[in-house]
Figure 1 (cartoon, each protein chain N blue to C red):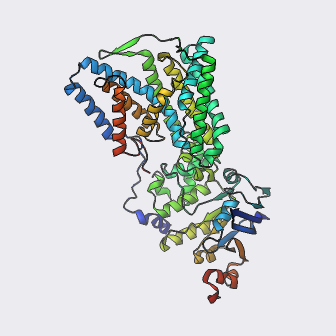
Figure 2 (cartoon, each protein chain N blue to C red; figure 1 turned 135 degrees about the horizontal axis):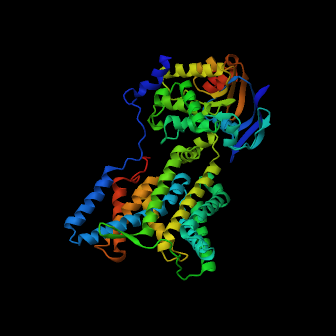
Figure 3 (spheres, one colour; figure 1 turned 45 degrees about the vertical axis):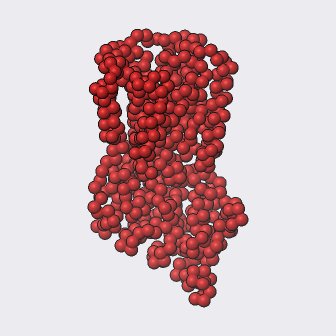
Length: 239
Length: 335
């Protein structure tokens, strides 16, 4: 059974159609990739699914419930959680508190929430920064904090927006490994990524977007050989 | 495993010292300035030391009063980014609620204050939910300004309609005063000062230690991030405005015994409260406390030299100086 089902999602911003009639399903425990050139509408697609932006047309069904038009916090509370490409930590607070806020949505008691937050922090290997103010983290640490905050909500589906962007190659490998582990533990992931090596290594299915529409959808290795896809990325001459 | 650890730390190997955030250390500059100012006044000021002591005591107590009025304002300002022009009117409103309960129901003034707190909290939540939430959630900053200004006019005129414009006074329940180093400190003002300290302490603890407090800080730091971890931002806004209004109710109740009440009495505190909030650092409860005391001291000690409202000139001079050297305010976060 599919965990997420989007039907005919469309978002128009006064004249510009950022996402145009996109339909997709994400199966339980799937690793679903989304790629496309800049401005293809990938992030808007995530914002639509996560409830930050209301679609102009279309429906979103998550885990059997129609969540179209729900607010972002309500969507997050039923287990559909996203991260941002540009990290949004609570800067004045420690790493532990940053994560504990998310844990508190799952655990009423303060001590339980803290214990849970600590476990999540260990999961993403940030334990040495537990009491550090989040503003003092380097980029790689902030990426992991963003991930930890999302994981603390115990999501059924995690939407990752370019978790590898801004990382140097030596930092990418351990992050890819972490994502692979999380997936192996049964987490369903939908991710936007520009780094093709990571996309091909992780995705089970791939959606290619271009100018708001679906260009191709299917097996990552086949899809990336698709003529229309190569054209969109490199121009007609190379196709 | 070791690969992962290096990946996180390699960009910051040198600064990987885990330090506890210590946001409430009193900046040495502020303490030094106050001490130097007082020493100079005593030694070179050319005024009778007894008189100076009286001014210092009065100033401290007045500062507590100012702090009390500013705490609610700084919370609302810091978390919602709303400049609440209705703050003064809501202060008047709380005082009249207390006045009504003491005169009509015969409650002692401090008990009436305790009753007024949940009333004002409910009122504040209603205002935020009903009038402001739509605007604040859109990130609109001018809208709330106009709405709260309108609300302030409405409150003041309703108070005028019910209670009239004649100055009224709340029957006192604690008369008398204490002598401190030869200076006179009235019990009522000391209670107000103690109340301010208590409110500041409770609020700071609540913000640090409770899950609601954490959510409030999260929304204040990054409302979008907070929403994504499942925090209902609209609800937190309403609660924050409610808590801010509850602080106003405490201020109103504690101030009422030594003020003569008119519908505009709260407005007189508004400008100074804004000065204190900016001076202390937007959104900082401790900053409001320290800022209030500094402004209170400057005003009363300054009055030794510039009588009447002249001491306000000094208040604004201090304000400008602080902003010159610390634009984010005494306890403000670097942005």
